[in-house]
Image (cartoon, rainbow, N blue to C red; front, side, top):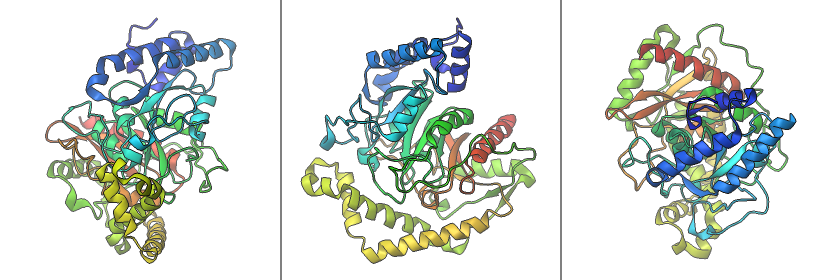
Length: 441
């Protein structure tokens, strides 16, 4: 048996060790539970955790491996954001209005994870209804700092070695901002490639399920399981084929984009990403987005708030006082969005998507900030999502890669964006970039 603490293993390494008999799923789950027991009082990543249920799933996974029926994630623990339904665990959407809620079936993505043999470790803390009212989670690098949101518990659990994989979601910046603040990889895949059936909706036009991990390879492991068509999600699109992307025989060609939110960035973030781009030399070229993106931030805000008023309106009307004041205020902002404003924003978003398709000609990927800077020392907010929202609006695959550090030594991610459907290439670019920047450190 290996002497390495199993909780420190990536999903890929854990699977390899289980395949060779050097590790069991029970050993892995026990190690992760021990890590949670040691750190949860500080990090507070979990909304629900049943150790005996997790261990029972691990024993079943070990039996499948002995029987030769192990799936591609057999025995690997996965944290699930608490807006995603689980039949054997509560799903409370981070809201006291949903306290004690017990779904009667799994969300599609949970069912796919179970089919692949994953251990559904527990439910990770979310902001209320995946909007912006903070939960209890703290940043594992500095508990006085926010972990970001809305997928706060999912990102923090992966960053603190509690699980190698976790599921989150992004409507504004809820995957990539927490990934940046917590120093892990976050993947927001191409819109419509992971089913949202059984996930609490915020915006049909913007909601993206996503994945947190500590390596691009682990992101790919989970994405291969989850990127499956599902008729229950009416917005499923053409699917990326993660096993069919050509290898990077030549260095990628990057467009460095400051974007409309650049002025909101902190000086240490701006300097760090500019230094990285300079070190890339001829492989990176600074480019401005087409002029139609000048109102991208406002366009995303109109669609997001208008959608929130529709999806959360019933809760607001039934019990406004039961909502966090931040949630109620954002619903009220959405109620002020007119139908004309909403439709105009949808049309403008399509125009921006067309412009972005042309912008990608000549480049493999875009490099841009994943967050304004390192995690703020403000637990009453989850941070500024302005560097993510308009890319979410585009629906193109995006990832946060933990490449930089801020003035206090806290992590800062770089956002990498590829054309629609090129999720596999995105993950290869992330690996190339991490290796290249790692050479300079």
